[in-house]
Image 1 (cartoon, protein in one colour):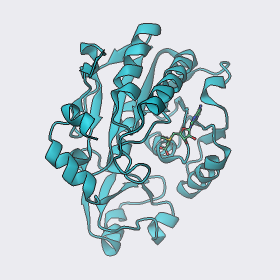
Image 2 (cartoon, helix red, strand yellow):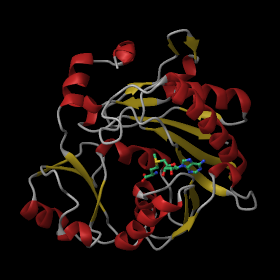
Image 3 (cartoon, helix red, strand yellow):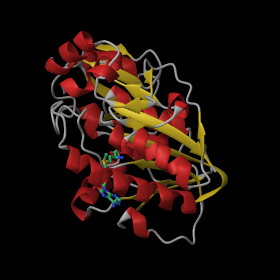
Image 4 (cartoon, helix red, strand yellow):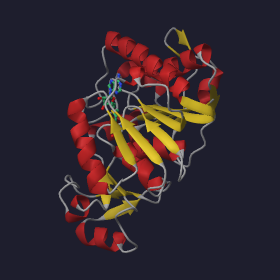
Length: 289
Ligand SMILES: C[S@@+](CC[C@H](N)C(=O)[O-])C[C@H]1O[C@@H](n2cnc3c(N)ncnc32)[C@H](O)[C@@H]1O
């Protein structure tokens, strides 16, 4: 991870947070919970509310999935940082949206809740195995506007156009405690993923309506899978990069790293590190067609 020191705003805080287990995050599901949600949550766990998203709570348990409130779909176990891409995407009731890499459904169910179950969410994922969890989560959370599809995102048919698309891309997961525990990825792995990520974004451009929004996100630190992808998308498509404004603590995307230049526009994108929200890494960029 030391190669990323120049990218991190507070290296000591980053290391300390990465080495310690953060509080678990849960996202309230308004489709299944009522006004007494916090009272019921408080009877089960100590919790604190996120400062930037009223539905996100930090809970003091290692096993938030083991509770009746969870089984009944009143909340979804989701790290605080993972709730940011859909907040930025801001899907509206009645819209038709695509979640291109959707399993196990954390963000697709968040979209359905934000849309008050009005409209359509197409939740696509290449992995048939991971789609099983998505189906279970969609059912548990009562996300009845979610339809599932099982394409390689690069092959999704182009006969339907969407108001908004999320590309929560397959990535090396350097900022995911459970997947890689903050170990840096091999450079070759990141270069291969970067090509796939660029291809998924080029496909998203073809699937979004004129004036529509595309949000790109990863949970990794390397600029190869973040700013490099975004700079290629700007260069090779008609998509416009939009500046993200958010109350969630963050730093801005970087204009260069090692011997690569990505350009000043990268300051429109955001990086969230573990010490910002007491959770995993997230990188987010927003485009308009
Ligand atoms: C970061 S995870 C998605 C997490 C999900 N958005 C959520 O919030 O629960 C990335 C997903 O991309 C899927 N994936 C990998 N390659 C893909 C491809 N070519 N097309 C579509 N999905 C792909 C993986 O199976 C994985 O489920």
